Length: 392
Image 1 (cartoon, rainbow, N blue to C red):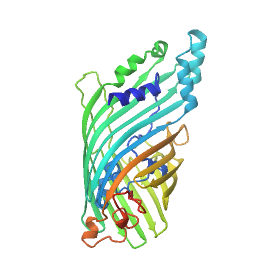
Image 2 (image 1 turned 90 degrees about the vertical axis):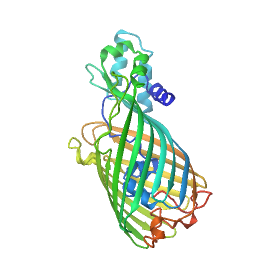
Image 3 (image 1 turned 180 degrees about the vertical axis):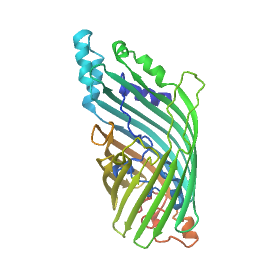
Image 4 (image 1 turned 90 degrees about the horizontal axis):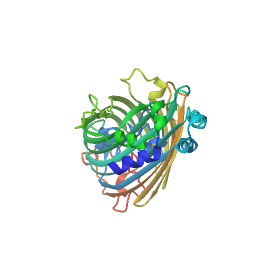
């Protein structure tokens, strides 16, 4: 964990910032391209992070050998922040600090490996996220926001009927990082060691998610309505260091819906999510995500809206390997449209899949939609997904 956290802090050094964004640290890059509206679509290892009920639709035996992602935003702002380190005292230093007001920079890195079979999934992951912005032009304040999670998640999904699927997961996370404001006195010193010491405090936490899917499958169309309670009861982290204040994970009640139009040569999947229904402090427009994916042979095209800002993405399947890129916007202000942080992410995945059976197909139900929620899974092989995009 420490090397990844040091990397995040180094990329952000020496400053991180105060506006609080809704985290997308554990989001799938494919989902981010379509607005992160994925609760009703997740039906592979991504269900471990979005909706465990989706594991009821897993097809065959699948091993995501690795998935590596990286993202960044605000290169010009990052350069300004780096320039402050070389500034002198007095007016020159004050001018450099003033140039930072309103700037925001984000970077994210991570990787995971996952294994799924019908109704069951397990993943180990290491995800990191760091953000910068500078507030208050009179007396600049900088807020460090660096999180590095090393975790394990085990989940299951059960198809009680062809129409009702339910699931749950358990997760253990070792979290390193903090969200701490730094005032003008700290800026005058610019001591990176103080940041490293603060960011490398860690704690351990246990959490759970539960989800349910109501599905209406037909030969060329399937509709799904989902409800998920993430971080049931809240997720806190305990540390042996009495001075550590490890950021917690809040309850997240999410409703989702998706419709999948499936033909032999083309699939179209529009979806919508409403997140954090339990939080009154967030405006509704920040909670609503929506998007669509057009699934073509070898390539997927995606678009949508996340917190009111456009998203776009492309995915390419080449045998064992898959490459996904996306751009999306995150709101850093108090209301949508105030402060956008435009982010760019990419992901490389290597995955093996064997077989095309699902629990529902073995019992005679939901044959049309297959385990992946999209095209028939009969094309799954040890050489990868082939024609099937086993990601719905």
